[in-house]
Amino acid sequence: MRFKIWIGEKSFKNVKPKLEALYKKSKNANPFIHPEWIYPWWEIYGGSRTPVILSIEDENEDLILASAFTSVPGIAATGLWPMGYQTIDYVDPICNQSIDDVRGAFEDGLEALLNVFPFIWLPLVREKLYQSFFLPFLEHDSVHSICRGAATRSLIKLPEDNVDKFIKKKLGTKNNTTLRYRERKLKEFGNIEYSIYQTKDEVSKIIPEIKKIENKSWKNDAGVGLFSLTGTPEFYNDALPLMAEAGRVMISTLTADGTVIAYELAFLQDDTYCMHNLAYDPAFQKGSPGRYLMVKNIKTAVNKGFKVFDFMQGTQEYKEDFLTHKEPIKEISLFKKSMKGYINYKVISFVQNKRKQKAAKK
Image 1 (cartoon, rainbow, N blue to C red):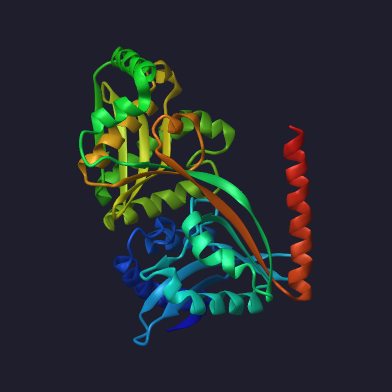
Image 2 (cartoon, one colour):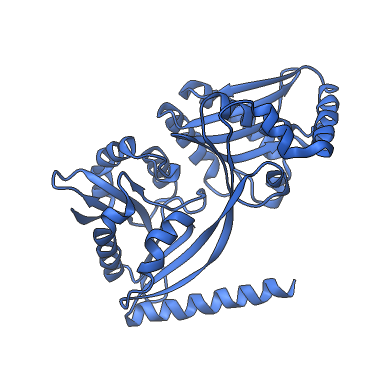
């Protein structure tokens, strides 16, 4: 096997069929490097940047591993950030083999990338990849690095059956009583219905309704909503139907007398249900529609045969009641041991230390 670097729009277009073939062969792959995610992202955000794919190929030139990047300006140099960086929860590459089997080629590929782009930012690296690959890689003499905790990943190991018993046990007596009380309050708003949208047409038609919920949600005012950033409405309009066509998306809603009052967006990855976003209309807050919808989806995930419910990054209180375990997510910055790499290493180290000091004073 060998690594290959694809640089520029023409190469990015040419590698798409290989990425699609790789994704179909990969188990529990990162949804945020699915071709139907990164190519719509590039159409919206590419601009004057350069797309870069790091791949590992077998003897038949079929891909074994792939990571997607976009160029970004640095100090006296151009570096790389993960493609889709403002829309993703994880940056792990697609790989259809054990990372140990491709370790040498992956290491060589990253070092070759650093020869062209003196810094690489990897903001959301899951624990398994960090422990199995990056922890030893960061000891290499050829790179400077900065590694720190970025977030926490919350998960539920789902039961094979009797999900009602599982939820009742996780919540405990007090929270179960509160859940039933909220459900009664919710039903005071009218006839409550739960719906699922998974086909391309279904997802396309429901997107305008979930935009309405996002606009009303506290997330929109805080600037953390699904459609809050420049370009994200257009991006999700394009990407979600394509992901649905590939069988990777599920949108669920709650309606009160036919009006959507809450929605959840999830990605479906083999045995894992990945909850990407949840929002509700605050006018219905006393009925906790978001929590009600999430419980419905935990039950749906079990009934559909999923083994893991991944809350993805974040430690919000509503997740704590249900999760069975947590994992740290790392932020890793790599720098070539060169003048340009060293300058960016020092500048980014300084900025991160200042932010850490500022946060400690709050």
